[in-house]
Image 1 (cartoon, rainbow over the protein chains, first blue to last red):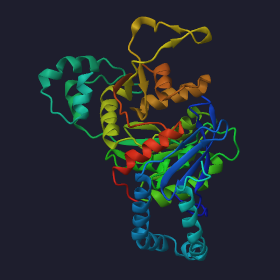
Image 2: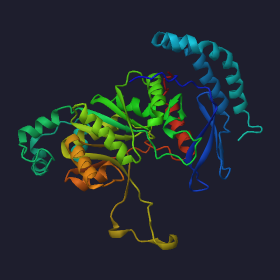
Image 3: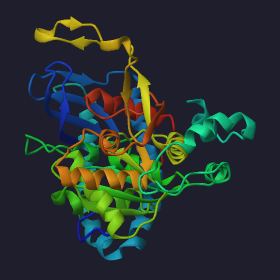
Amino acid sequence: MGSEGHAAPEWTATVYLAELSCGRCAEPSLHELRYAGRILVASRCTNCGATLRRADPALWIEYLEDLLQRVRTKPRRMATRALRNPRRFFSELPKSMLTKPVHLAEEFRTLLPIGKV
Amino acid sequence: MVLPAMIAAGARIAPELTRPIRAVLRCIRVPGHESARRTDANLTDMLSQKPSAVAVVLAGGNGSRFGAAQNKVYLPLAGRRVISWSVESLARVPNVTGIVVAVRRDERAFAAAVLEREVPDAPVLLVDGGQSRHESEYNAFRAIEERGINADVLVVHDGARPLISPDLVSRLIGVAYAVGGAIPALPAPDVVALGEEGLIEPVMDDAPVARVQTPQVFRTGAVLTAYHAAAREGFIGTDTASCVEHFTDTVVQTIPGDDRNIKVTYPQDLFTAERVLAVTHYVMR
């Protein structure tokens, strides 16, 4: 299996659009899915506006645990990628370092229910 | 049928207990091997062997009316993409020697990058999917045949079912190898038949109704025979079992499915899958 020169997908987006069936519309429609790190926080049907959002108190705890795990495992994961494809790794590193704070800020914004789905 | 389930569970069964079953099994015709009537001896050998399997994962989807939509098999789920969980579970089955993933042509590079990053040790071969599920399956089967990849059984799985357990796959492989085909099914006692204008009608014959899941596992010869015949006749099956049953007399045995083996269809399925994976302490890549 080869990557055919395609960049490895990074976790850069906190919003994904996917066609899923809507429980309210009862038909497939485009859904907006919001993630904070590895955790799915909310979904919204773009057709009827039906929204599912995690509002349980455990969300923040899970997010912080997830963030800690990501931080803890980051060196190992970076080393693995550097060894697997050094050229790609070092070419992408500057951009990753610059955009990481922005991504973290976006994750925090996603967790806040104000003005969000 | 109890015997396949016991075999799948690794039970050692006294020969005298299995004699009636073996008598029935001897009558089962295996496409491509019609002339080889089984004896008690070679059936016992067969049941004690570990059949080799190649998995086919369908990741093409049906396409989307929405240009911006992401194929749901590539949605993030607990630190990986949905499809990576499916591939990893199949790769953990000792019998599975290779995994053929049928992807949309325009997503091939992306799929390769995802799988290389998230399941780097899985023995994956990518092939182009087709316009339908049936066509994607056929493309994958032809790739297996053309490359001369040997397998006793083929395991066909939907890439949008990330919570498949290796144990269920192992049991399906054991049963399919013994009887011809095996599919997981769950009882569906709340199913009703709908008539015109949504009116409820009695379910015909009071026959038990089941919800069928994937993976669906069949002897390789049966699958290839069925799909080549389907290609000649322009037949398009709704799933693997429908095609195999249409063109061969392979016995297809249901075994109990798994409630957790959900197909990502509704957004709440993603929430559910994430919760299930969270308790398994998933590993990040």
